Length: 637
Ligand SMILES: *[C@@H]1O[C@H](CO)[C@@H](O)[C@H](O)[C@H]1NC(C)=O
Ligand SMILES: *[C@@H]1O[C@H](CO)[C@@H](O)[C@H](O)[C@H]1NC(C)=O
Ligand SMILES: *[C@@H]1O[C@H](CO)[C@@H](O)[C@H](O)[C@H]1NC(C)=O
Ligand SMILES: *[C@@H]1O[C@H](CO)[C@@H](O)[C@H](O)[C@H]1NC(C)=O
Ligand SMILES: *[C@@H]1O[C@H](CO)[C@@H](O)[C@H](O)[C@H]1NC(C)=O
Ligand SMILES: *[C@@H]1O[C@H](CO)[C@@H](O)[C@H](O)[C@H]1NC(C)=O
Ligand SMILES: *[C@@H]1O[C@H](CO)[C@@H](O)[C@H](O)[C@H]1NC(C)=O
Ligand SMILES: *[C@@H]1O[C@H](CO)[C@@H](O)[C@H](O)[C@H]1NC(C)=O
Ligand SMILES: *[C@@H]1O[C@H](CO)[C@@H](O)[C@H](O)[C@H]1NC(C)=O
Ligand SMILES: *[C@@H]1O[C@H](CO)[C@@H](O)[C@H](O)[C@H]1NC(C)=O
Ligand SMILES: *[C@@H]1O[C@H](CO)[C@@H](O)[C@H](O)[C@H]1NC(C)=O
Image 1 (cartoon, rainbow, N blue to C red):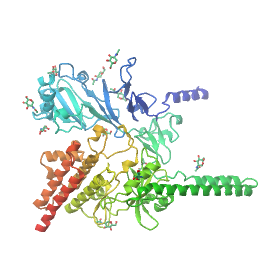
Image 2: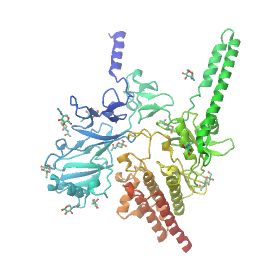
Image 3: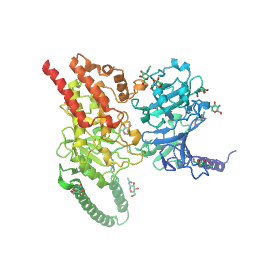
Image 4: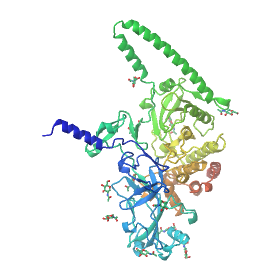
């Protein structure tokens, strides 16, 4: 019979054996940060995401190196991006004087498909030394295939093995392996986000990009494995066979930082104070001689209350001063937490307009009855209050008919809150997808779309060229373009990233840009410039032209990314095939020409190299010109 004591002992042993601090991110490997959930040791990160930090035991001349272990091999990791959940490894080098990959004995790169890593579709794979059987494969092994340009300019042993092929990875058959074998190809290399138009000399270093699935809550054996924000409980996915640290109450799991966090609801840190105070008074008054004590306490509390109130008023005045320093342009207003709560009916869920990368937006009404949009900024690594006020001051001075006006901010609540003018008719994104539910939803005509494109371009050009200092939007997308009742476009959310600290290292915690709109050069140097806005705007132009989503997994795997898809169609001279059929219905030749012109302009904006993209000013002018052609048609008829 098992005694209770023994049981206790076993339980204690079990909990000791379990990982004791599962939420800890791992320390740097040498100077390279290891973002959560990647794990270099059993005491940090998430154990499903193991990589290796090779410190070159005993060899002091060697820099520590992160390695990615596959089924039978191991590859150096050259970069990691926590926010985008991707890392890049060096593909296997060739054996000396042969066109055979070093990992050929293990059939090339083979990821364990039970692990949460897979190969992304950003990889262009070049297969070398292939056998004739590849000619029957769907891969591009023609004599014009890109791999020949690569071979010609790199030379080496592979020139003696003339058959080579090129393909884009990430399809279902290639998401866990890049296979080499004698009956197929014997060597490979890969390039991330390759611009096929570039000469080989300007291609990036070879690399294989690998993404990881968002980590789930950490596994636990007992409550002691979890932090105070979470509770160890049975995992419904495994019907309770496993236990995980599930977030307490309203907190939600943030897979990027690996913590339970607020679900971006605006919260008042002082919210609990009142109830605590009344509890205190109630507790005291219930005692003997309660009234006397209560009177003293009440007097004390009243004095304290007044002092706090005076301090608050002073602070508000100081903040107003920072906001309106140098007195140029429109005055910005500092809103109090009370005003914001009243305006939103205490963040009533019914007032929620939406939530995006930067937080939630509520509709609110100010005391004078005017409608405003109230945005709770979810800023991963927020700046200090003064810096926020300074940034808001800059953004408030921006004044252009194609930009949503920022009226002021509130810095009293847990998150900074921005107050914008309210734009009646929803986002461009909703209009394009037909998600507008007004009484008479209106289909966006080509003329509407040209005007929206032009307004947006003008707004962005103003930010880039007329605002002082210049403001880069950094998150241009159709859901950030709002339409007023006359279907004029207004750009919103510009400059928001200025409010968050942007880490110098690429593992920035601040979400920048949106997948599908993100400048591919961002992956090279982790910087967003005015030309990144031009790129994102190019994607918006494609949305206007096609009414399709920037990222859509219901399209063919190679065409998931709208920019890539349309660029391919343009290269194949099939641009008009992707234009929204509704737009093509009964149009004149002239209108069709303007659609083509917008398509080509978009492709220009999507140029891989920043310096080849037009400036936002040039884009606005070009659209104006295209509009004048479209108008000429109207007169003609
Ligand atoms: C130590 O590392 C350096 C650089 O990687 C290498 O050249 C050297 O051979 C290593 N020495 C030993 C003893 O492993
Ligand atoms: C793949 O990963 C699973 C889970 O960690 C492990 O059990 C299995 O042994 C691995 N397979 C190979 C071939 O390494
Ligand atoms: C091509 O690969 C085969 C093995 O599959 C190898 O025997 C041959 O030497 C390679 N060709 C060259 C030119 O290296
Ligand atoms: C990996 O190594 C194991 C044992 O050496 C072997 O059985 C297996 O076939 C290898 N896998 C691959 C893909 O080469
Ligand atoms: C192969 O790739 C080349 C260069 O990208 C392209 O011109 C050619 O049309 C492609 N061929 C096939 C069959 O896809
Ligand atoms: C590669 O070089 C060969 C021989 O010099 C030439 O015939 C072929 O056209 C070149 N291919 C490419 C893609 O440049
Ligand atoms: C690869 O991983 C991503 C998430 O990281 C996932 O969405 C995708 O479905 C995976 N692909 C395959 C083929 O498993
Ligand atoms: C976070 O809040 C939003 C809006 O309130 C909701 O749609 C979403 O499901 C929440 N997320 C979680 C993980 O609860
Ligand atoms: C009350 O005060 C205590 C200590 O000051 C604090 O821990 C607690 O969260 C407060 N709020 C409520 C609602 O009890
Ligand atoms: C106000 O102007 C002065 C000089 O013109 C400048 O030094 C100062 O930084 C400005 N203050 C703000 C908050 O911009
Ligand atoms: C714009 O919104 C208003 C009020 O929400 C609605 O009455 C009007 O029909 C909308 N206009 C268009 C063009 O959708």
